[in-house]
Length: 417
Ligand SMILES: [Zn+2]
Image 1 (cartoon, helix red, strand yellow):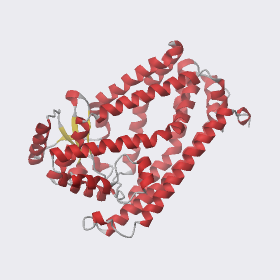
Image 2 (tube, rainbow, N blue to C red; image 1 turned 90 degrees about the horizontal axis):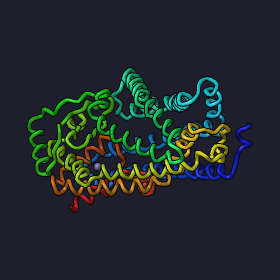
Image 3 (cartoon, rainbow, N blue to C red; image 1 turned 60 degrees about the horizontal axis):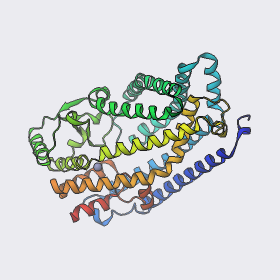
């Protein structure tokens, strides 16, 4: 209990923010569950005749199952957070590594072992999510073997990319003087941009196969749309998303001339060519409105703010003591900060969601102008049904979390267009 004796004002501030976050998340989850269950008995009028009652009820049950599971994940997350800080686990890892190694290697070992601990605790949750919940609702297409292969690949990739990045950050923190956080920020932005560039050609193919789209009529339709919208791409690809899940999607990756459009095979299997065109027009809307760039700029600005905060905290003994850690060094500061910052940043969630929903409306409007709004509505209804997305989310839960507007509202806007 030596760690507890170090509690200070910051401990109280942090525990208050943590309690507030937990209470909010549990309250929102409860609202969502009650609201969805209360509307389970009937398909909402706007969707009558388009979605059958069994599909509506499946969506309700799936939403409730995932929300209930989210509460369990929340409990685990809090136990890990408190165990690492006040529970003394991080201090114990430090005590171990500090006798084994030093300098940058000590930092790397401490960061990787902390990640390994939380990763291992997370593993049963991921297994349950994939092989119990997704399985029960018929979405899981993954074998246990594929799950393990993915895990090994992700871990290897995390080490290959993560180790040099962590070493570079720790080195900058140690060498660049009081304003190190500006150098780390520049490095971090550069690294993220690099990943965005290499992701489509180097990283994504480690996990999926990408084949050029060979459906000739569909391709002609899409190329006509791209021409109309004045959009250049280096290729249209189909990804074998079906090997993991039956959820469908379409997305853009890359920048400038390396831009690619990727369709999940599950999406193409389900939508008519006109509907695929409408979905793609929506994605083009995101691009034309520069949503990706705006989001990147916002995230970079936020990370500058967070790093500036860390720049202040790193020298403050109360920050370490307040979180139950007795030792004090840059690596510990980095880890503690990455553990507690999300608790404070949680309050930004509704703002980020609001921005995202605004972008979705803009992209829908663009799609309605450059393709058919009706086709987009048809595609969305199919996607809501296939993904078992609830049509009746709790309005407060939706305001807080949803990156996409509720189905009814979105379709109403499209039908007005
Ligand atoms: Zn969108």
